[in-house]
Image (cartoon, rainbow over all chains, first blue to last red; front, side, top):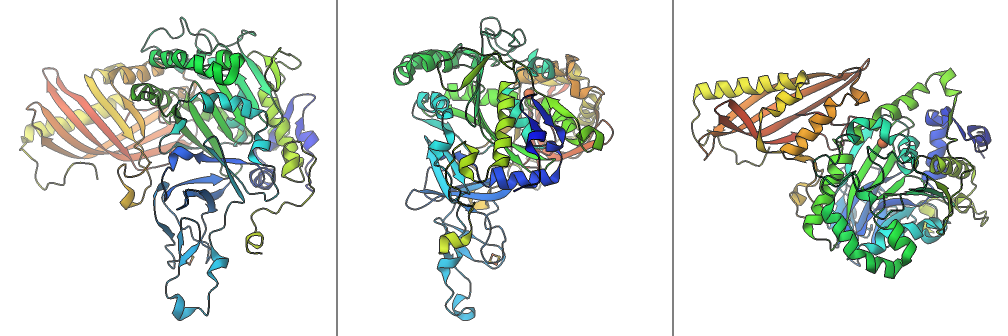
Length: 458
Length: 180
Ligand code: FES
Ligand SMILES: [Fe+2]
């Protein structure tokens, strides 16, 4: 049990969040344990590691992780820590390898994580039990339609259980993709001085800030082409989204979605959306056939921000996947990956890659605007008096929209429903006694077993 | 460093005057950017410019250059219209993070000039250090090197191609909304 009063930190009735949650190192430590050591966390996409020996590095919380495809084609994830003394066994961000060799004393591990080589083993050890010293695996690794997730908690619910209703929305992205979704290569990475929760809730639900915080960018994006804000609705300079019939924010058990419902405005910020829009319409009949009218017409092609708790955003339209990795209470890394359909024509893929780079890459027209306020909200909480204040996310409270999909919908994308949903979920995760309670299951009361070596080695 | 083959002497000789003029041009260009005179900076580019900033991926030496599923990634890969769009954003007066104004300082040196097969074009390498100061003490620096093609026109030199090589894999700055 913890000593924090989460009712006081997150007041759901009043939609208030105490600002110490962005600053307090003790709360951060608790987050690493309660959230990042228990939730299913995004690791990457299968298309990043198609061959045996292909690997990528990522983080789960602050834990350094190697994700590698073994000889048996199975994807595994390991702590990037040598079992001898703890040095990192991999220093590259990705590539292809037959083994991971520690630079300290040369212990070497194969792509299945087994200890395969120990320099001078015969001479210096009496029967070293290699079995005991394989790389420490992440307890569970599962793929949801190519999206790879890992979970440290031995007794966690399955990935599908964890995703719950959000899978219905993720399917629009994964199942509509011809030949499957494709992430090519490495993400953009930027380190920002702010608390990790701020960019998460900003991306999943803050439609309010777009027209103002990004005013400079919004008045030039799309200016290179034509046919953008004139005939494509959605978030744009001319439509900041106050139209309550044009979008919904949906709060589900655990996760959230914001979507514009018109089937095309995902591409509203593109300079040259024509090839993508043409692709959408060509593909739409088959999407309707696969996923039904509601998803095929209203969600496919819309600007849709899928927020998977705690730190993953899948953003259809802008077409990127983003993860926020915490780096201490006052710092985070943003990882942004462009996503395409594998069988799209190369020229259409190019349009998407260009757009992601120009808008939300490290030099993106919109990307840079958010850094300042994320930093200021975090660092002004260093002041004792400021830290006692509470943020207010009361917009759209009580507004309900009719919606036939899963979750509770609230109208308009200038709305704070998703952000409230995120902080309510944060509170539930922080108060949980096990991984099941995080998603509202009343299930086992078995203690968190994490990835203790004893579990693996008996 | 860079993609060009290492040569101890330039492929074709460049006159002292030309080399001097190119050095002067790069210093003037840096000052125009420091002074946030973006429309004038655009005038120093050719209409067919390609401007790229690749991400320096952290890969093992044996895994270099697209030998695996890791593909090259660019922070900027713009033609003239893209650069114009970035400059236009700065000119809107709506970029709150630049008000109070950002202070810029660019240093350019280690300039090496080579002739190319095109008579009026020069291959120019240079190294830079860019400091950006904002607010009270938000000081960030970026160091790197550039590979340019400069074209000599009747109005003087123009940048026809630029590849900016940064050293940092993880961008340690809130944005890279600046020109190198
Ligand atoms: S720490 Fe890795 S071999 Fe010793
Ligand atoms: Fe934003």
